[in-house]
Every structure is written in structure tokens, then in C-alpha cells.
Image 1 (cartoon, one colour):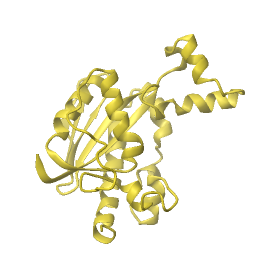
Image 2 (cartoon, helix red, strand yellow; image 1 turned 90 degrees about the vertical axis):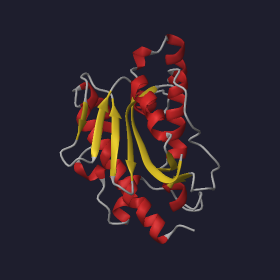
Image 3 (tube, one colour; image 1 turned 135 degrees about the vertical axis):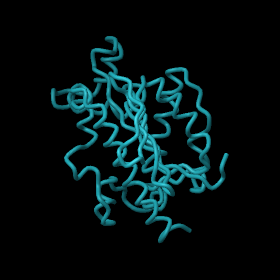
Image 4 (cartoon, helix red, strand yellow; image 1 turned 60 degrees about the vertical axis):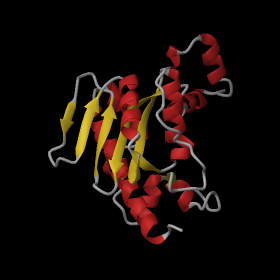
Length: 225
């Protein structure tokens, strides 16, 4: 492992359809949804949990070279580099992209995320277990050592001392271009996926990586202990 190498990671997820679960599971999932509105809101939250959603894109960016890769699900085979030669796009099934992710992540010493400890990393690890893909490393190391995993949400809240804000909010506060300002958010993933806009999902993931990398540079330059 290269001790000083580092990588920003981010994932995009898509909740499963309610009908994909059996009657017992559906009853459990909707146990506290008493109205149609509450039912809709509950189903929208399926994308937040690895037992009710799947990963449709995994992005990795080296903040030092500003180059990286996005692994994503698509209905066609893709293995191409962007015109500016900085982003490698590779498609595959969820199991395929997880397997490739664990191979790629081995060479990096530090992981950088935004809310990775609360979302991306446990999601990656549990989805891998469900699909019988062996993780190559622990993405949830000792919480208070950012040299192993720097979760910027933890750093900007000083481990819970301050209120949490979204990636979009922090980007705007720091004067950084937010990928959410271009008309796409995580709530659009289901529609985009059903419309076959797989490359756009991958590019949206890449935008999140760029924003997170810039936030990391601000933290490293002004807040790093």
C-alpha cells in the first residue's frame, strides 16, 4: 500500500421497488406508514439502506492528480476515458463494480469521504457481503484518525459538536461549485436510471467527487489539526 496516496470515494444508490419484497417484508417496511403520503416517503427512503437498495455508481478520485474512475451500472458495456483524459468510465453489474472497486481501493492509503462513515462505507461493505464479494480492506477504521479515513462531515462538525449540513450547503458556504446546482439530485436517480441515462448518473457521481475533493483541500489547508 502507498502510505501517502489518497482517494475520494462516493456512491450513488437506487431503492428497490416495493414489489420486489415479499409480503412479510412489505408489511415490515410499511409498518409505520399510515397514509399514502407516508407510504410514498418511506419508499423514497429505500435508497438509504443497503438491504433495500443497490449501488448504481461508485466514484474514486485522486485529489492530488485530480484523475479517477467511475464504475457504474449500464445496459451496455462501457470502458472509456473522458475527452479531457481525467475520468475513466467503466460499466458492469453491481457485483462487477463492487469487485473492481475492492481491487482499485487497495493501493490507496487514505480514504476521503463526505458522510462516508454514516453512509457510503457501510453501504459498500454490506452490499458486498450480500452479493458475496470479499472486501479488500476495512473502510470503517478508528473514527478519530483522519489519516486513515477523513470523513469531512465529521471534520466540519468536529465529531458532532456542530450541526450537520448537506454537501450542497457546505459547498455554497465555502464558495465551491455544487453538483446539486446543475439541476440533478439524488432524488433523480430512479427516474434517470429508468430512462437509461446511465452515463449521466456516472457524471453526476463524478461531480460529487470533485466537490468533495475541493472541500478536502479547504479542510487540509485551514482546519487540519
